[in-house]
Image 1 (cartoon, rainbow, N blue to C red):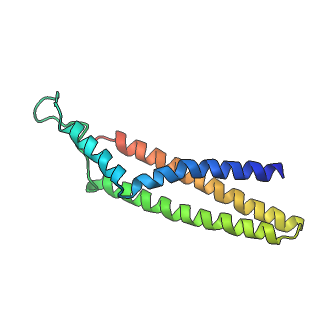
Image 2: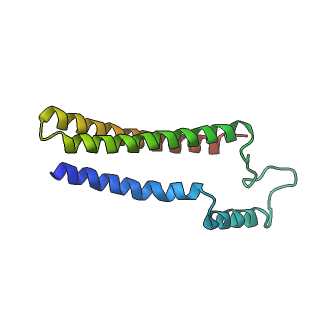
Image 3: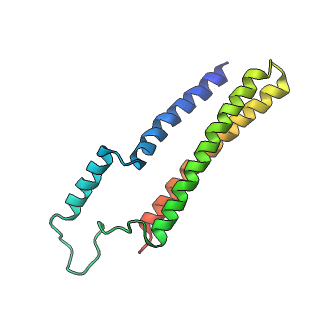
Length: 137
């Protein structure tokens, strides 16, 4: 029973960290406000030499970095949806196992592998975005 409580706590913590990040992907007023702030910062006093590239210049979805970023984002959403479905399936298997040890083990493994998949996708997205942001354009 303690393992189930721990698993639910970990899932809740992951949901709290993933949902705000997903909300930033939508076109909300807060997101628009952040981009307006970024534009204001970028259009402010430019201390760089004329003709040099500044950190404010972005790819805007064109070119290799934009395409890779879009592919990684779509792939992460697909894997996230599949993982959530598998967690629900694992929970259903757990409830309907009737205490049979093989059914319980199968359900626990399904839930565990779905959570591991979510973690791997989150870490992979972080690594890819870090690499894309540090690659010379």
